[in-house]
Amino acid sequence: MTKPLLASSLAFAALASAQAGQAQQQACVDAADLADTIVYAMPIAYDASRTACANRFSRDGFMATRGDDFAAKFRARQDAAWPGAFRMLKTFVAKDGEASSASGMDMSAMLSTMPPEALRPFVDALVGQMIAQEIKGDTCNKIERGAELLSPLPADNIGGLVAFIAEMADLKNPPLCPAAAAGTAKKK
Image (cartoon, one colour):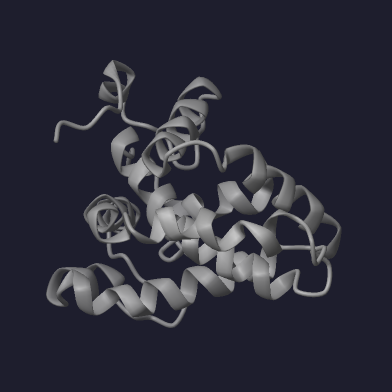
């Protein structure tokens, strides 16, 4: 999996990570919320890669010919995935002591006082910018190849697959909650 694709899930954590590294014990993330975060962030990552790699993607490659269809299946699921992505964001803001960004803004207070829907445009813009900054020109072909390999899968399966890989790799940032080992399948 390419760094920018994984970065889309971790970008939510970075919103409040200025002091998260100082916390004695980092909060864990439910695997289902990580899966939702992937689904929610994939269109943002797609748009960021289209911008960052605009002159590097082939005119007849996957991103140019089928990329919009790939992103569309995630866009269709964003509203349903937002609550899980928001919970993941809140997990990283809630920590021992006061949660503050580098600017001194109390992120925890902002997340608890503002309606989640009001925060979405802010989160989308910030995450898109963070992902775009991580994309290097020499990774554009890898991003395109990764998106093409994932494209036959349904959006929810891709989110679940990334959560499974994070679990198997014993990912520590963000760590998955121990209860996640039972599975990430959602009841609908």
